[in-house]
Image 1 (cartoon, rainbow, N blue to C red):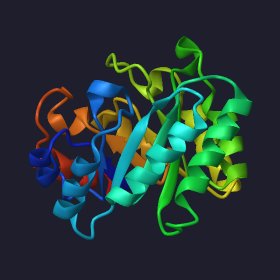
Image 2 (image 1 turned 120 degrees about the vertical axis):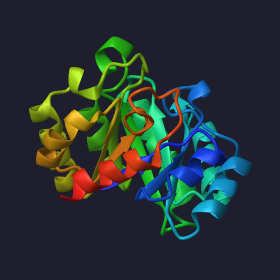
Image 3 (image 1 turned 60 degrees about the horizontal axis):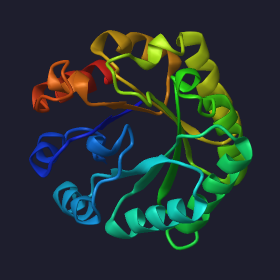
Length: 230
């Protein structure tokens, strides 16, 4: 299980380098809000060989816009290109996922395409993670992800329990994909997450001392890594 940490600035990126993956997003633009290409490039320069991920947005069903954003993130240096599906229709999901995969994979086959749905999909009226995953696997995505779409302090575990997330992870493996889980994860969630055994967990608030608006604390990144690897 790898640890993905989401810094909010170049300064915080330097504090996050012990994580397995450094994430680039812009929370002011949503759960998976896109940051600027020059920020992606700068963080990649800081990270060096460390892989970075870049969110491209919580998307409406706009496959052309999504494809262009995905291609731009890949060109800017993102090793993982991540999109959230903020809509409900499965046919629209297929079009967007296909467009993102086709934008990235032919020119950058080594890069990883991450498709995210939201654990709180019922309150958001968006596609369920299970429906998304079936389409993502069929269209050649690499990682199927769950995050919270509304950042109000509620955890993914408040919307999907351990059994749900275990099933999600198992089904992704059957589809040939890895699994990423995020959404207000705390240190108390690490034991069940180790049982669930996703490939990646994404955090911010946990390594900021519990308040995602505070600064990342490198010692908490190290604590999370030690707990994951113990």
